[in-house]
Image (cartoon, rainbow, N blue to C red):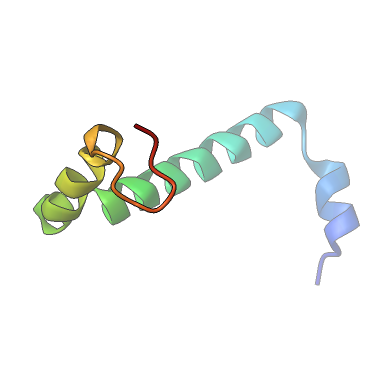
Length: 62
């Protein structure tokens, strides 16, 4: 079995860039999958209105 230090020492800068790109794409797809689609449309609509909502809590400024 190859050790991690041996694996890292054999990678070229181009391979590091490719690895970073693959990781970015995987994370991007995961976030898009998690937050995209119609399943969460209601939650997104209510969150979009939060900055526009009037403060009615105990610390509200007039």
